Length: 483
Ligand code: GLN
Image (cartoon, rainbow, N blue to C red; front, side, top):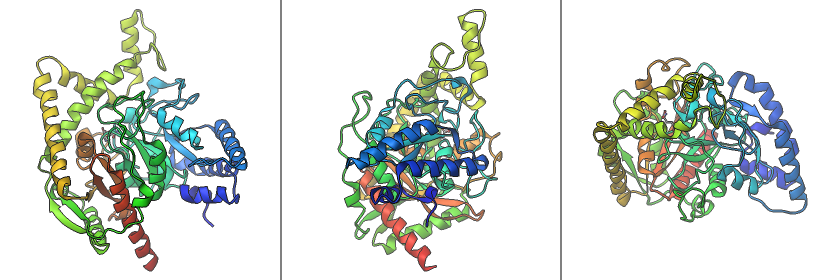
């Protein structure tokens, strides 16, 4: 019998439906596991025991009345950047100490409506800026596969919670890879929906033209189940788009026969870890065995992605983070006059990486440099987007590594921001292009840590990557069974 933390959403729903377990029991069991094991992993920054039990009780009562909701009674964890009414929302920052959300983000409201229970909030890099979760002001999260290693970031708490069986599923956000990369580092499934698929209302903004909320789960089927509830147009977010989600469950039944999948040669970068390349190429072979035709493709502007992203993302962040000035949100440090108060608050409340990005973003937007940096980055972004459009004329989806390396040791890269930025090369392009992407576990690296296979699909074709991911995951499970 699986422990509660090992359950998938689908399995938890089955238990609840058969009355083999109540939502209250699920919540109690999960809290017990978290209290015992999270001291080491530090995936959570806060738990809402009272709220979770209340929601679970209501879910059990609704089930007894015969109500049908898609996630009725299933507890999930939420990255500490999404507003849940009455809960803290620190975004991993000291500046938001004491802030309590006055409202639900739209994704939270949708999940609540469909019966999900919000167990607690997960750790993250401050304002989602980082790749290791070490930039959090609330402590360091560890990789459950090896606690000496980083879980990835910025949604490292969510990925560590799911991979460490401290959560059935979790929400993350992905601006430049923050769902896919920690999922890959920890060994779970992480999906970044297409830009506009999920409402950003109530998500604390980092880079508004790139941010997306998405699921971090144990299986592809679970990711589809969460996405199904989260997706949809929202009048509160003018960038959310009203394109109906294709029935993902139906898409997941097929094999890969006759599908053309592209392998972008630029994604096998210099200096890449051999064991990552080996695992990804073995995964490509598996997709071939499943009937796919895998062809070599080129995304020639990939080399500009990191520079483009770190101009656009920092520019947008410098504007978005201006609101954290001690007036409306969180902690304040007084001063002799308002200006001194702003300065004191921001100097003490924001961490090094956030300050670095605000300074960089302010610089690239400043008069005289705006055209040289910001406008050029926008042009490069268009070229990156059109690279994808071209290959998707021929390919159903793309296969690629998620990151050039597996997880590294805690502290190893924290003092070398450039090295850290370069590690985002394979996830950033999807955000710049607005397309969807997913990481699915595909092996283990030489250092014993998980490797993820990235699937990329055209904008608003999530069903394609779920289809490929599900078929691949099934083949991997079969192989593991045979071994
Ligand atoms: N690691 C990238 C960064 O530091 C991506 C972050 C994200 O997706 N939120 O910006």
